[in-house]
Length: 221
Image 1: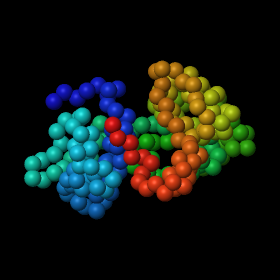
Image 2: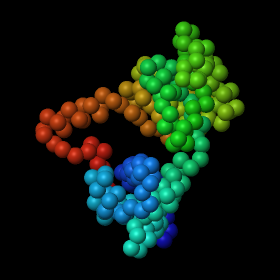
Image 3: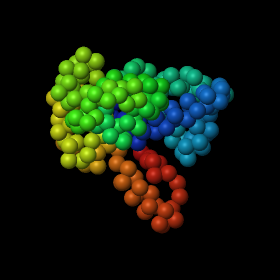
């Protein structure tokens, strides 16, 4: 079977791959050796057919009469999602959100290494937070090159986010995770993902108000 180009894989499928990987890592901690598509789907509120369809985009994974080997499928999903390598990452914004992310140990376990932290506030620059020294924005271009930074996490106020994104892009960072509650304009060659807590809470409030159940993350395609 020929794997389709990555830009042809449906976004909901890619999102579910991360959910599958998270569940498989949990099963690994429980020392479970094998798992069926039905078990994997049930744990995530999906059908076994959906699981098989998603994985079929990338080849044949299961074994007749056994299902999936947990360790094998975990490794393959890490390869597909490119988390089998280390991604050097910078955080811009050493406030509360940025500081919380610096202390989040699972970043390292997932292959994301925070190698630099930047801020423009003189009161913060030079401080050490969770083992990271906060550097001025003027150091950003050189450190991006020196430390091969591929991902930038934006945790600044909305009115500063676009300038920060521009600085990351100008320095050559190809991927941005945006925590600021504003839409960023980026070039076609740059990938961007946004995390907006207020939007998620609004969607959750709407679902609760209607008495709806199920996951807001349950996208199917």
